[in-house]
Image (cartoon, rainbow, N blue to C red; front, side, top):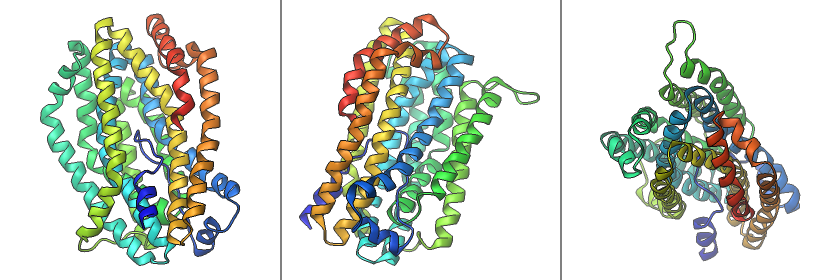
Length: 394
């Protein structure tokens, strides 16, 4: 039990735009997680998870591209600084996400699927409540959140518009994370991936329409980017909720407060980590503000490029969470621990590649998101310096 608590409370996950979906769809696949050779098992489960994670970060990458190339450096700086607060909000959502994954996957490993589905239902209700609370608390504080970072007035105005729109959809975002964890702990690597693929596809179409305007649709700028992201996530949440309900993966009933406390206890360390990192970026932003809007925009580009590797790490972490949970439930803590170390090794290979690439061609990454030479120059400097940190992220 002690090993289970230790591994469950220190899942190798990074809180950013969201977690990848990893799970098993049948008793046969569950048996594979506890019997097949670990390298093959990790590869089979991690690849869809990594793909799903990268799809999740594409939501904000697409926003960054269209805002940076169409609205300009001021809009890019606004969205970039808003994302640091969004990171904090998402970290709270992932508290439930990570805790639910650890607890529910353990139940599936023990063969108690009905109890796992009930836990997922309780976690969904908790996620929706937390989403409403974040929106209710955050909306009145919006101007203060940007004044804390000392952003220029024009950046703060656009930032409030972007973050305020995102907060309105926070309950649906939180709900999506709970559905995501329910799939990962007991369900399906393919259906959630398809949901995310469709969502990203719609975002690719909606972003330019809502940001720049098209026909009778007015140009909404940064608010259009947030509306696009919230709208597609909401649809993915609704479709995912329908699917898990039909499959019996999630059952809503009277909450079991003891189980919810366990979910929160396990997920809290990951949430605190994400909150601390988001606050670090807020403090870094206060310093970057002294060097003008191009520096703020460059900070956002650097964070966006870094997020790609972060999300690969999240994919490996989510795969490890499913494998670890199933093996702990099956009474195999030695195999669970070895799965964690193997995943660290596989994921670190991506870190080496990212480090080398960011050292050699940082300008090309920066030019994806901005046409401003000053922004590109500052972002390239950031990426070169930060390249070595990529070695340890996964």
